[in-house]
Image (cartoon, rainbow, N blue to C red; front, top):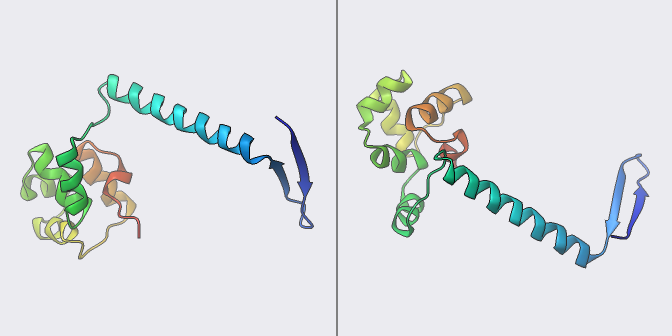
Length: 122
């Protein structure tokens, strides 16, 4: 892989590579991500969603509206596990409230999902 090292006026080092090499690196990263997801799933630590579940998750007002029913939890049970009120969980499910990292962590632990699975990318 041929590359050129460039130093910007501010001292930042950058590497210039061909588009073909960049594409190859992207392909390798995709394969690595696939392998990691496959290993996680095989180890039982990941969730595989059906097409219907993916559609339901995308249609939900928030990720928090999707996961509790999938886990068989009612709002009151999730609220108790996370140490918040049921109305707070309802507001989060509807997307009317946000939470700090500590709350999202407690909710994710109760739901057995990653914190990232409960965050909406704005």
